[in-house]
Image (cartoon, rainbow, N blue to C red; front, side, top):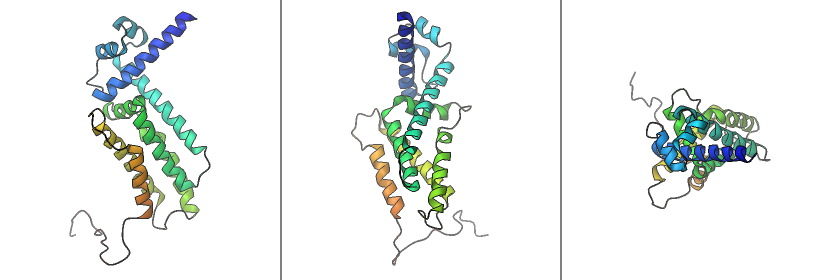
Length: 211
């Protein structure tokens, strides 16, 4: 039993170290030797638990997905109007990315390992269902199609992750990505165009084609 518990602790330490390294340096910039050193665990012990970097990356992604699913279930279990629930999902996921290196790492690895399932595939369908409900209940404007609002939610969440990634590790103080996203959502939900004079609308053909 003691040996089994020690093995589980070793495996968990390796996964945490791998997540930290993948998050900072990416898949190509990380080696098993770096993970071994970061974890303070011998290469022999590492390869006993994980035969390759690919296996470690897959484990990190699986654990990141599990935390994402748990966050999604936690938010959707709370009573809230459908539109607010959809927004709450993006805020909770941004908080998760902000606080959990293993989730940040999983999101980065999706981009760097082409065969990986998209992180957004885990949560966008739930957001879309909530937005469909919100539309049916009159919580959205008539011209705010749920599919378009779901795209907005995905873009805002990806933007929050990009904002965070450019600032982590710089040593400079920066605003919480979750707080920033919450403020941007308030702006988006209120609308940014003025109904009075000076309102500008985009051209019908934004590509610049004249025919």
